[in-house]
Image (cartoon, rainbow, N blue to C red; front, side, top):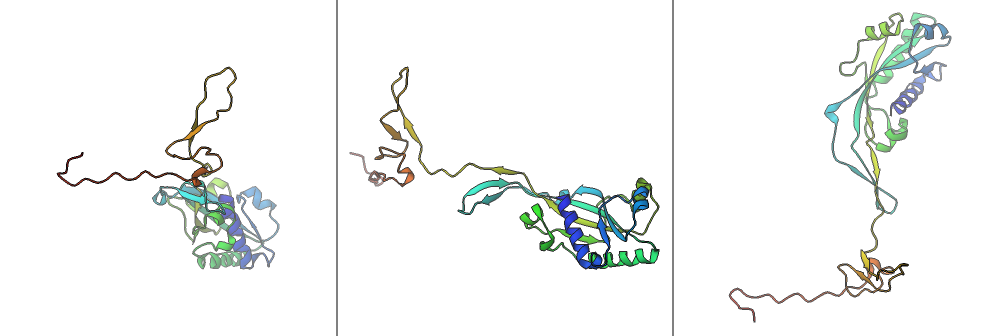
Length: 235
């Protein structure tokens, strides 16, 4: 799920005009060594915090159907996670960095949810809303200054972006639908057992060979017993 959120953010920012302007969107950690190797204008979207939103944890299962309408699997409820990104712009001049960061800010604050056409993989399959909070951080997420200190780099203007995305629940396959009734076969004990000739279908009467008819075979219904009136003795 995380890499699918990354791809959706990359598509969102690339479509805002960054790609046409020759600006690269990467997801590397902006360490001092990385900054020294950078040569082209770059927008860095660094994921630094992942936390589950336990308030949105659900229960129950979802049934998955095939083309014929049969249940083929059951999937547990999705679990929601806050993904917090530190977005920075890198260019040769501070003015250019601020211009790039302003363009990113205008894009994310005008987008409350990631558009469905940008979603791939399990995010597209679930069909759930993926929230995007521009300028926000996750619950109890580390401060930007702490992140820069851990990275060993110099503090730069940055933008906090929080994405609330679902992680698909566990999917369990189910057996094929039952199309034949239960039958019991009996045979005398022998050293080499032979295929029994007679078969009896449980709870069904009037069916000699259950293999070819299944549930479609004709069944004899017994007449319902006559109802007695209150006070009437049974003969």
